[in-house]
Length: 178
Image (cartoon, rainbow, N blue to C red; front, side, top):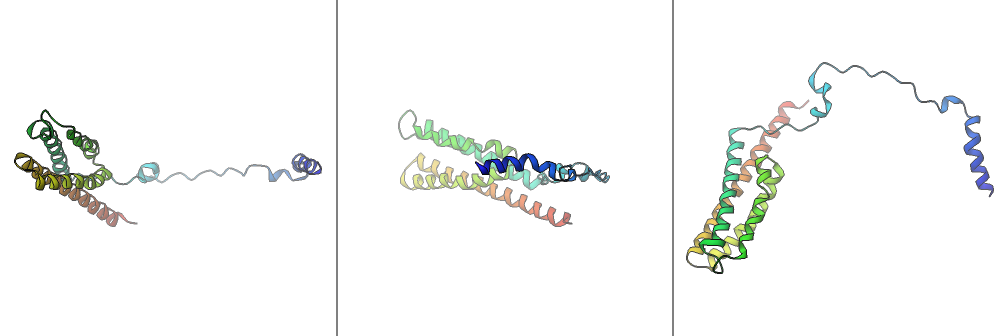
């Protein structure tokens, strides 16, 4: 009970015992005007990384990646539904084309993260194509080989795109470093 009285006393009596200057807000100091250069007027935009430079190599690698990915999607669907399905009338293996549709938006928007994770995901399709190319006969083996080739083309395009963009960013940092 005495502790409660002391804390009550301290909270209510303390402001009367302390000088008023301790509870006053600090005096406001005017901010200096920003310089006339562009980054100081828009500091949020100055902190953003540079936009990807759309060099011919970046555009070509994106076109190759998107074109190869679309061709791989069409191949997977045609293979499992019409050309050489595992069961007559088509098989549920056509669903393997579904994950390939996820990175399309990121590729079209030049998102580096998409190019990176797609290059890792493609190895699943390379593996599946190699297994089926060596275990099946006839048209299915040829379609599996085409799946491997298209997967490697898309992988090479993604690697080329990431490498080109990273080199451009490094050159930009070196050229514009303070």
